[in-house]
Image (cartoon, rainbow over all chains, first blue to last red; front, side, top):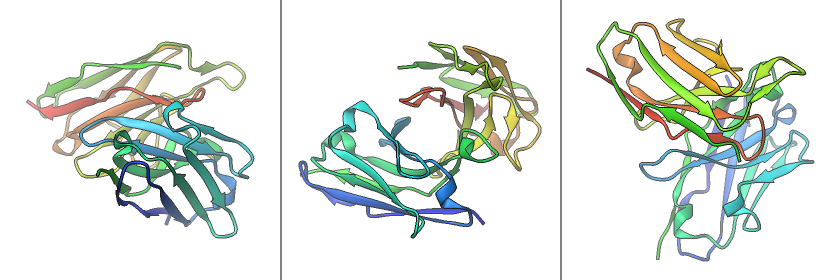
Length: 121
Length: 113
């Protein structure tokens, strides 16, 4: 069964760093582009970043450019998000998401349960 | 950036009745080279992550009941639930993945009347 399990969330002070991880299982992780998508409390969905299946291409949402870094280790089926210089507005549930269009599907076809990041002093 | 606008923001429909949600994109999300609309619909129930319902605007994801259907092309899309069931209470989002940044509609909250 296809699974994505996020970890690494927590409470952190403004300006500090946090690293999120996502463990993938049940599919050929190295064949799929992967996303991070976040959802602030009571708000809608916001795309954060994407990384190509081989790690060769990465794109970021403007507000996180220069602060967040997406990466992957295909040998360990793991996706990561290094978040530096955190701000209160980064407070959200962070979801690890598979790009279905990399395979036989389309859209964002597999979602993790999410990990909560709270930025507060 | 491609702006996605859903309507309505809130919808109340009686059980067994039809529910329709509209999604408009500020730019065309149809890619002629593969004849696909890069538009998907997600369902999010309280306390759960979103779930993919439809992709390429009208293709149901595996296991999605056939009462859910998608239509439209280019910039104007609809999600229709033909006969509302209690388990369909959720927030529904459209999103485009034609280009980056990927953008979402603001969400439509669907409840039972």
